Length: 230
Ligand code: SAM
Image (cartoon, rainbow, N blue to C red; front, side):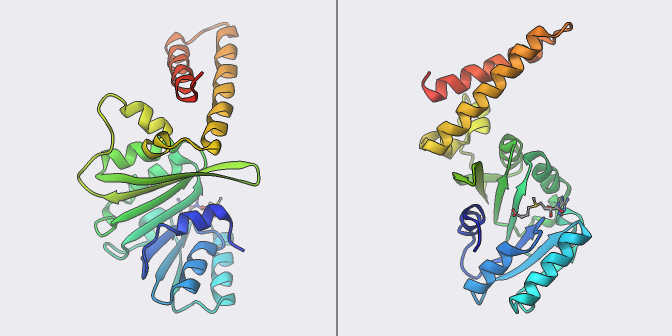
């Protein structure tokens, strides 16, 4: 059974998708998609040998070698230019997702949709989208096995969803998630607020204080309180 996290991620692929799943590990997501859609095709990229072998074995086990091709390599470098129309990058930190996109920019000319599922630091992914011609068209936040996950979907387009004034807040919270605050959203930001407040207390106790940094964290704590209605 595929996790809800990966099901939600996969639900944003169109029918007959031609996509890459970068950092695919066991290749569960591309196998699920191609098993349910006989016209979908996927490239599963993995940088590490162990997960690459696991991906190969899942694809064989499901009899999907005609639909899912597994490639060993770093990030988007496993792709030829204009080879896929959608890219999935799930289950990593936002900074790593952002750097994979940045380093593989030349492979994105045909990519109409990017579906990212950052475990932390989603802000970095949103910032990359806004600076590189991708507009966030939807976001989801969900809880599974005690973890809260965000899924961010961006399409290639010239428009921007970000209002000038609130750009920083929208990057932090997510423009779509902010519009429709769910219980998981509240839970995530209550946790983040107590983390930030703990960090601020620790920074204030330190012998050498970085006042700029403290101020930045305090500003973020205020944003979170505002969003939580506190
Ligand atoms: N995408 C799957 C998911 O969401 O369940 C697997 C997530 S797993 C935690 C992250 C995977 O990304 C690991 O298998 C790791 O080897 C791979 N990875 C990390 N950096 C990568 C990179 N630069 N290029 C390709 N794969 C990478």
